[in-house]
Image (cartoon, rainbow, N blue to C red):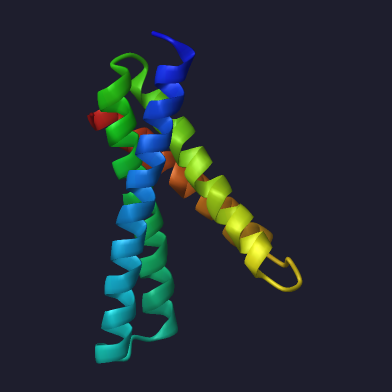
Length: 120
């Protein structure tokens, strides 16, 4: 297996993960508009979306790589979370991301990606 194949598969998995994220966040925004969801419900839904999307990315990556699927899924979950953190840093004025929320999101995304890789 060449190095380029892994990179292309990783990019494909990440793109699919972010498409899933976009669709799910759009659905959540619509639900917020129609149902007037409270803040705790929205926070839970966003966390679930991150886990689900990273699991989908891990699943896609695991199907592509055939060996060490859980490790590839873990890597996709890590990359997914790091991109989220990078986007948050760029878009936030003061760059203040709460450390505990960031760490738990990182671990949940890694876990989701690993799970997706394992079930692939």
